Image 1 (cartoon, helix red, strand yellow):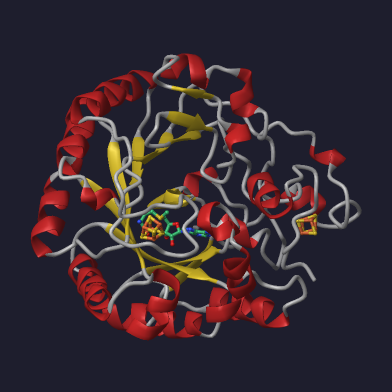
Image 2 (image 1 turned 45 degrees about the vertical axis):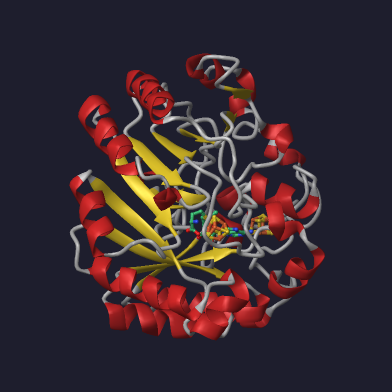
Length: 371
Ligand SMILES: C[S@@+](CC[C@H](N)C(=O)[O-])C[C@H]1O[C@@H](n2cnc3c(N)ncnc32)[C@H](O)[C@@H]1O
Ligand code: SF4
Ligand code: SF4
């Protein structure tokens, strides 16, 4: 789920993270723009969990990826989906997982998307398998943007969040180094929570040293394995954390690297603007089982609009359930948002993130930085 202060759709970027996802919405520092969600006639950017298999088992993983096998679509089935996306007018696929680089046909799919559908590709990866040869083949297949996830600046710190070995840490640093010299938009993404807040500054230094232009901080979301009590205790900020506010304020002033905060952080100071909700309006999320969700921030089963094995993608895209969250009557939000002077700038922030924390679509965003 990182990357306006109005989180403008024009700033949707591939970082294949949560949006958790390759596709990420960011916050920058512009003035607020219109908050009205206008339905696109096409899903511009699609985030696709191409596999749920993973070579790591991060305790906080929102998709609960593991080293075990999961049902997966074949290359042919994926190409058929690309054909449909092309007809629907999609211009960007954010390949994510699990670990997308575990799919040996990823380059074939990216190449097919580019050649057949004029669709660009972005990838979110943990970087462990991204050696020089793989980076080259992905670039040749048309890689446009890349997000490499790293949750700690030393093997020990990274292990606490990612359960990655020293060798895997070394490989990720090498992957960052290799990719920083390529002609692709590169982000390094870091999940930042209570336990590792101080390491955020170290990550900015590391990125600067390695020539990375953007660091995207992902706010922890209690979804998937992240729902476990111990994980929440380690990573969830308390609602009155001055240290968090100070970090965000100061990091945003940095000239380089650029810093972005994903929607899980909520509306940001100084004006608390927030992007227009694009769930099912200009994007959707497709998981490895064929389930379609309006957005990567809405991963509870109740938000599934349909499954592509049972209904056509066009039919699912045109289902009224697709835009239910983007058109939610925000004036019904209760609690502290109600009456907050910034409400017209943020409309209460991301409803998916709020739901993940509270189970209530009409609750106020519990961890809003507006103290
Ligand atoms: C699910 S991973 C998939 C791609 C790849 N395996 C990786 O780690 O980058 C996508 C991104 O979501 C982040 N993420 C996973 N679980 C999260 C959670 N509970 N809250 C916030 N971000 C999370 C990961 O750290 C990663 O940056
Ligand atoms: S966050 Fe990425 S690397 Fe970690 S378990 Fe989930 S899919 Fe794998
Ligand atoms: S408290 Fe609610 S209305 Fe106020 S800035 Fe935060 S999310 Fe927006």
